[in-house]
Image (cartoon, rainbow, N blue to C red; front, side, top):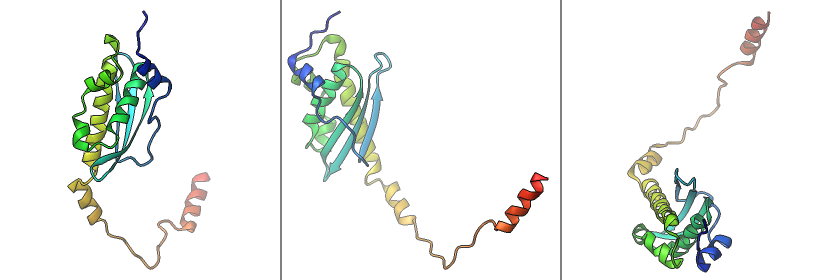
Length: 162
C-alpha cells in the first residue's frame, strides 16, 4: 500500500522544525496512539501568556513527525488561549492534505499540545503551589548533631559479625 504524501509533508518529515526538548519546560505532555504505536512528547516555554518556545520528540511515522513540525511552527508566538483553539484540520490543510489513514496524527499532535498547555496551567500560578512555597521556612541551626554515633555503629557491627 503506497501512501501519497504531499511535498510539504515529506519536507517536514525529512527536515522537521522544533524537534528536541526544552530543559525545565513550563508545560510538558506525552501522548501516544496504542493502535499505530506513535508517540509524541511536547515541551512548552511560556512568557507573558504567549508560547515563547515549543519543541517535540517523536517516535512515529512520517505523518506523526510532519504534523508535529507544522503545528509547533504555527503555535509558536500564539497566546495560550489561541493555541488551545488550534484545530487539527488546519495542520492537514497546511500540509496540503494527508492520506485518510494518517489524519489521526494531526489530531494526536493537537491533543498533545492541549495536554502540555493543561500541564502548564496546572503548575504555573496554581494557588496550591504558591501556598506550598510560602509555607516553606528555612531551618537555621547552630550545630548539627549526628543521628548515629560512630562508636555505637561499630559495636553493633562487631556483635552482628560474631
